[in-house]
Length: 289
Image (cartoon, rainbow, N blue to C red; front, side, top):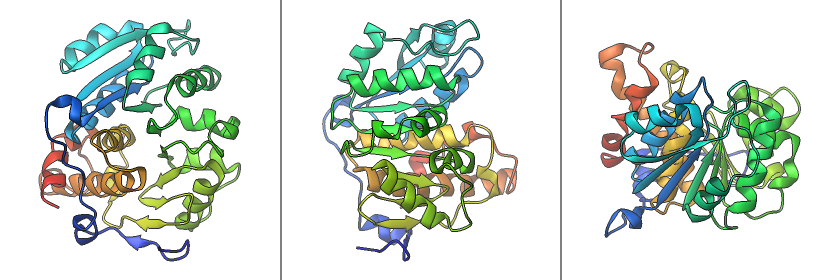
């Protein structure tokens, strides 16, 4: 087992020795991913995360987003069941209990919360609804505003034993740590994993609550583009849905996200490709490890 000061570098060889589950049978064998997120002004984040989950191998996709965007999302992602949720006057998800959302969460195999959400108080209420409805062994991916909400209520996860992956950027890590992150992101990921009792994927620095750690070193500047984090969160959810455990899913997702970006460099250069262009590269990247 690697220690906190000595993360393993994620390589194709490492991943080949840690092969992803290959479910047999129909789409149900690859699980149902539910993405909860968006607002009146950010439905694209839900689209990116949802399609990434399908590209990573999820069998069934469901999207729960702001009701004003549901019709457009259902047309843009015809593969998904799309459910509109109540909004506040400024277009954020309202966060109050909703019978339809509760039923979807309870039935999902993986729930991703956060892409495109707005309003920290509304998101905190929404996170409570999801955690209350989800089974204790249902894998969760928390991203974006869901991480800000979690920073105000760390007791929601600490000691729960839930299979959870957190995907903070530097700003979100600052909120979760309640301080500026230092330069050693391996150490910061390890501290977050221990504090929140969750697997943490921080810019390719991955840590588990039991002290294991890995580092993905092939990511480049082009991944720092709008929507890229939504793709990574959905990728993670899709890998969890097909049966990967949280640490395995985090490592594979970090690699697939980074290498999918590399595959776009010959066409677009190191910067300038779009997050949605990562989506079509994901299946080939995973398949050719």
